[in-house]
Length: 458
Image (tube, rainbow, N blue to C red; front, side, top):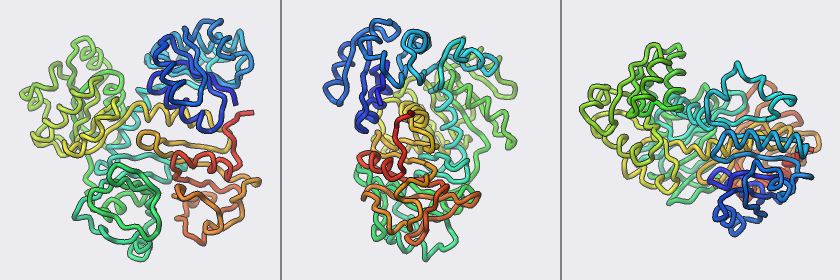
């Protein structure tokens, strides 16, 4: 498939990395020649320097025979015009745009994106993706990561293993014997900075970070098995009243469990806008670094603090000070992946990377047909792929033990009809089943071959 990616920043680079590794014909466009050079030097892609919305630039990028264009520049308007040019001039079949401004995303204006108006097939909103990720973290506060699969029947949990975890030093194969009615399946372990797919004989050690598939109804019990509390959040302080913080506060107001939230915002104009938009949430104007203000916001008694300003360092420092003051849990918005290694020493419980959320969302929409969900883990180190098994798939009709999966691939869950099945070596995968697979990045092309699902749309 021939793909044009407009914008060579972190999101564009990661998408180019994914698609080029899967043998697609990828061209990256950016008006920053240095970013284009970085992409062409490090990836198997072509590069064009220039404004993505200019027809001659798209022409040089090969738009006349492109199958898809992904507009992920820093400007909403450039992304929108790029999709319009791609449609009107070059008739590119598939157009994806990243849009940040909330006005463009309002449901009452959704008609704007019809093919005879502003032809965008898929609109990605990083802020909304991040807000949803924050809310999912609050559902399982002791997990550092959480994502839903199989229409929310199954959850992927990221869990930090402590030294006093009840199952430390226990081979994974014994977990099934010890907890025979538990649906949990460990599919990934990060140890000493490296992520890998474990074997049945591997043990868990203190300091490991693990990824576990479990039924939604088993989340609390799964957390308890791995030594985590399941205390629910009642009082939340949100640092940052911008698009992300406002979206989270609105959703908390709409929930039936009535979590009490307060918002702290440094910019007066943004604070006033948030106060006007929220009904039951208290909005305070001031600096998140001011501990007197933090005490007024109730940080020492808060169950969780969400640091979602647009400054990574403020988010980190505010979260550390909040934990020191007595907050039970801290969640940070982190754009710079090099800062992630600081989270454990600083005792920050969870983080959200907007780039990872956006990349996962885009991948979800560019894989063809029966691939239903894609979630990128870490720094694009692995993916979780949810897909329906086709009759032409080599895995259809076979037991899990008889399928030649690569070493870096594990089956996390199987949906048969409306029933979620915990996979074992004897479990048979049939046509029409939905499978959730953990795959190291290098093994994704082989997973797609086994599923008989090309990344092509056509």
